[in-house]
Image (cartoon, rainbow, N blue to C red):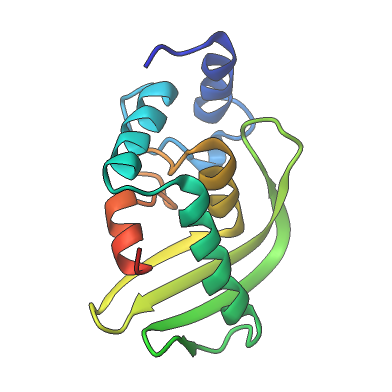
Length: 151
């Protein structure tokens, strides 16, 4: 996938700009277009969409936020805990979206595997098809994510 000038500028802001501290790209050597393109291929190969994935993440988050800080079992399959922190994180794609600093941890009780995401992770997946770069703190491998959340 060829990288547009706009994606190049966003990538530069993620690597060396004011958003570099969030390490959205981790230590991934690929450019932003390649990261997004390769993850999109994985999602498509599974017969899914980023919208479907994000909706499932929101569903689990919603059930977890009913008992902030306390684990809750959802659909007899998932243990979900939502923890809130102070502040917001801006979307690196410059769409004026600011996400609350909130972490969601989901354990699939049948698989005994877990994933963790932030509110911004859901937005990045749904709106930009971006699961973050390899080595990023909040990188979500699309295959593992979809497996753990039951898609």
